[in-house]
Image (cartoon, rainbow, N blue to C red; front, side, top):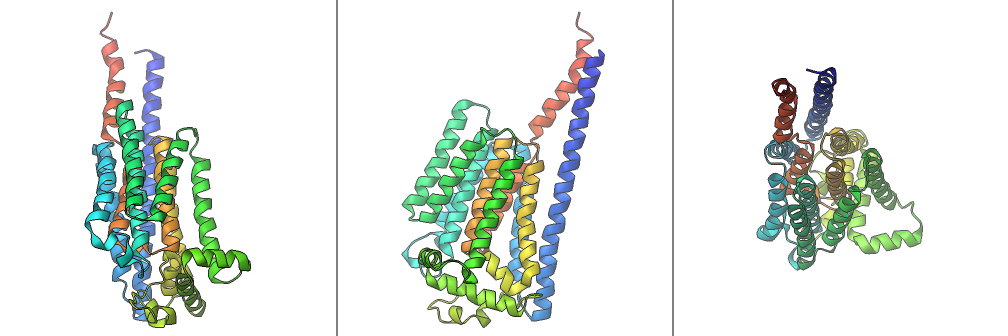
Length: 364
């Protein structure tokens, strides 16, 4: 065996070990973050007589979805995200509780779940397109993504159309990016900007004209729910009022014709019910997913596409009630898992490459 071949094999082994180490670090971080989220909900629930079952179910849904996505992405790197892309619209159409429309206009939450699930579906379809090697298959999968955008329009989900279109355009733009670091940083900045603007709106520190415009778009009732949550968070900044107790303290929620006891924002729900530590843990969960995408060995366009879809969901969850639906939490975990999986086909290809020098010695 020539020295250059030895060097090539050694470099491949070293690269694989480095990738395994990065993957182990991101997986360990995920275990710590999700475990902390579950533990803190139990702590605040115990001390404030809250009901942490909803938070625990959401954490379990993300963890289960992530594990299933990792397995599916390793075994079927194209078929698994394609199946996920088809499952999202099917759930929206088949499950009445997720469909946007006049029946669910008042509760405020179902429209966010519809938009979030469709945005994740578009992200899955685009990820499958980037994982496919055949040009015709890539075109078909991107056509599927366009069909999901049209599905959002047919269902009357305006926020879904906007979010799905943004994810699709970001996926196309990701194909021109050589480095994923700036893209991941940009996605994090978008999420931070939406979070900061929402907090400023609830705290009444935005200019009057901008406040009126945003309230008209978000509806005054939703903004009043946020302000109730912010007042509750100021009174209980450390531990919050306890999981699932916002409705007991919110005058706006009590006046609703169909009260559901939620501020219709994951940000303000965490602040009101689990304090500032709960808000920090929610931010860490999103940051962990972006970190896992930053460190994954999958192609940069695929990682950035998944990041765009998860960021779209983060934006929707900041101004809506998307994360209260188990299907959305599972979908987020599935997409993150599939985008960070290491396909077994790549491992088999690497094994064949390492074995070739041994066969070359027998050739004349």
